[in-house]
Length: 125
Image 1 (cartoon, helix red, strand yellow):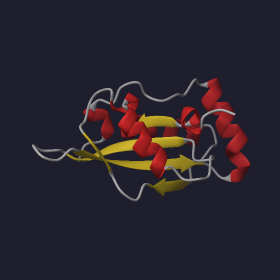
Image 2 (image 1 turned 45 degrees about the vertical axis):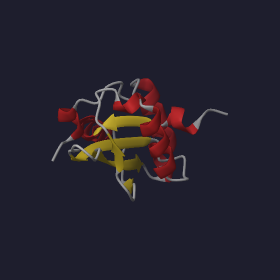
Image 3 (image 1 turned 120 degrees about the vertical axis):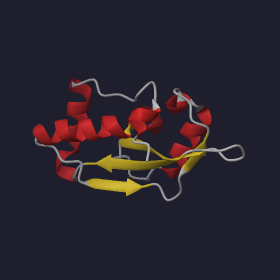
């Protein structure tokens, strides 16, 4: 059995918005969103999405339903001298009837987690 985190596609907010538009054009709707209750608190790095602490916090906040296979990350608050940056995470999925089509779309279009997380792509407020 595959690791659930390996099946999770982690995107910056900007990449998620673009993917949602592309999916809509293909007739798929990411109509279900689950917000992580608490923000992730870590120092920002362009390699944030590969950070073990980030991935651990993401896994703790991921819904139990494996259908939520897309996560979008948004920069909420800049850190300071004594506190890390805050990141909001949302998990997204389609309705049950489109799950197989979503999986096929992600595979066909080689959609995978971002390797870098530039602040500009995180939708900084």
